[in-house]
Length: 97
Image (cartoon, rainbow, N blue to C red; front, side, top):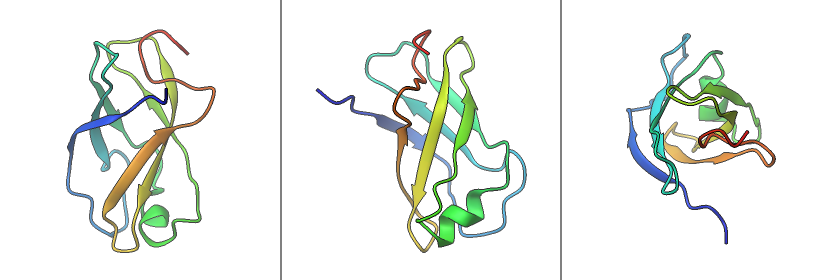
């Protein structure tokens, strides 16, 4: 059964040039006890906003957890958030790296 990810809150993401730490999302998963606050470390947001074929990775830190993983965010051509998913083999849940 695939893991269903729930978006608890996502700040407004508009098509614009990004700067460090200006893309933030609060993400949660049903089987996790930790809510993860993820911040961008590279100015890749504008590439996602205008070209969905560019699969740039966000290497996130899970605050309150030793787990870590790679998150891919999808935006439509207007820069609206579509979805995110974990790269196979990585985890952003608990200690399950």
